[in-house]
Length: 181
Image 1 (spheres, rainbow, N blue to C red):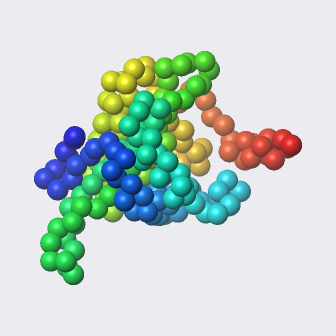
Image 2 (image 1 turned 90 degrees about the vertical axis):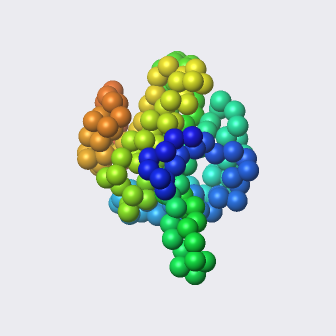
């Protein structure tokens, strides 16, 4: 388990975390909408993930196929008169069979609560997930960034060491998908 400060920590999900499903759905979708990722042509319901998506990921987080990682913070809850653990970040890492690279993985569903950005939490969360990937036998990691997010792409290069290998215009992908029967 990694720590970023005395209140914040990162760990891999386990099936016991099933009770956190709705909190993760809320975090991912709130982050998705706040970043202007929302595009009704790409995500008609204006949601990046569903309850069922996250529930499945948590249940399957025990094996190599996929793992969900969480960042937690302790936040003061006035009505309870104490600090409580709150999810402030999440990332999924799983297999990615790109160009016949069987030992490749991809980071997906990467979300950091907007009020926790610019603190190094996203870098630390991604690094912990990538460390797990390496320990699981993955040799290459991929991360897809929408072409409409140049600042995010720059951060992925600078903070995580990713390199741009190709660019796809998302509208072209949508059009090609619509043409299929």
